[in-house]
Length: 392
Ligand SMILES: *Cc1c(COP(=O)(O)O)cnc(C)c1O
Image (cartoon, rainbow, N blue to C red; front, side):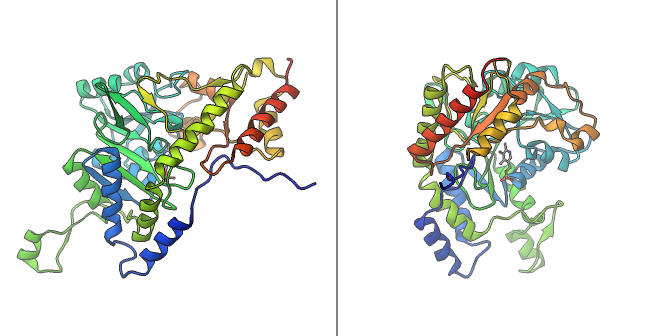
């Protein structure tokens, strides 16, 4: 008997057209800062409906750039969700500021605005909500708080390229940066589209975009007035920056991937809808939201196990699924559980809703290359494993 193919929880979809596009870009002189960088920025900005987009070498670098442009520094606090990849909070720490975690809403799994309000202090300077699993966070209440208190809103939309929000009767894409000052995407291979590593920040502010362009390029300022005064070679380091540039051939891949995004999101949505339909009625918890206001982009499909009705632990169920080739994962370990964050003074118990969610959570495989048979296999295996562990 041959072992069934192992299904990972996420996987890129790279086809012949993508490979062709990268090969074509590599035949040109400018393999790092060539014309495709601006082309890719313009294409994402247009897709999302935002005027400015700044590409970075990763989503993490993009978050760092956004936090730096927001002016976060020592003595400042930034409120974020504990249910995220640690990069969201790490970016705050890179700037010398302190991340503060506000608990999630048990049904949407996104940060709860009432919890943000409870954690505001005179030092709060920014809020970094996360569109968990691809469900847009509700920015109405967060935006109101931000305006009252003069806070910068940086939306971590690493999961949500292609998601939409109802705004005054019309659908707007996440990334239009209407309600957030800056919106951050990641192009890591498990995300909706990939550039290998890569990320981008969208904003309506030309000033924030300028600061981020300089930040990703060593803090360099170079313009006609400086050249006129000092010579054509002249530039100035205006702030401490980094080398966070995305390359031309990566942007060629991004442009080719973007042309397939609508299909990717449609396929992810079809798979998620099957999961919801066919796993319903087995006591599993799933993310819930108001479909009249939000269109989910389905980066992740997470379930919550009915542990009180099961004999097994989450770990036993995780291991049983893994042993049968279903590559489950857990998203996420609450960020403040990590030893580094505990050393910063964070404590277990800070966000009880997140901790309860984490205790029973599993992520099922979800990526555009899954066949209908792969999806059936995941559903059948989950139901079989649950059945074997029934009865407390
Ligand atoms: C993937 C991800 C990031 C980081 O993106 P990279 O491109 O891997 O650096 C940040 N936040 C969230 C929520 C993510 O899922």
